[in-house]
Image (cartoon, rainbow, N blue to C red; front, side):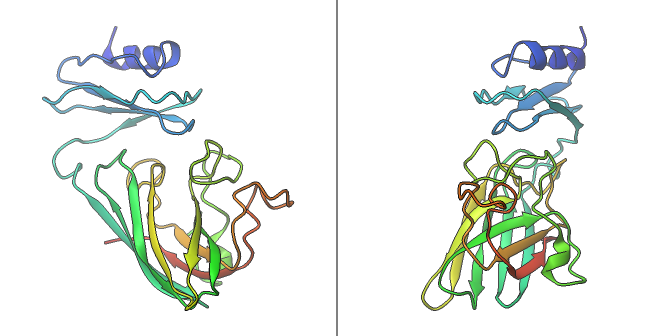
Length: 226
């Protein structure tokens, strides 16, 4: 049985704890994150070894991705966002282990009202009509809205940031689903800061499972390579 056929069979029938063998210099990395579609990475480079995440969350969908594994492909990736609107700020996104490592988001946002504010990645980088044209939350798998730690969440659900009494929020978020490469890359999409607190899907409002009932959009910016 070929490596690819074995990988697909094993992932579908044996679960995430199955080791996938190398064959002819080809090795496979199978990653399963937060009940989202499993990402089955196959590369053609010699050397290295097969690795697998044995996360207990199982998915009934598998995405098969071919990707290069030379040193340049594995280098740390960075992106930046300049937020504009009623509030302003600059954010830096860093992914140290692409394509599957978590992405760290940090920076400072000014001129917010004191308190919590919904903080999301939205689907579109179109700001031609202001923040409203950035579309809804980035949600390629059609999930309900939730908290970053929930199994049921949008890729773009990053919870809340907290502004102090001076209207300043320090952002320090690490998220396992946001990526700067691969099939769920957020490059070219938008970060949006909302006027109100995100209820994380638990508020019982008509919009809780869609937007977290986080109110209007007070700042936004396109995520670009840095």
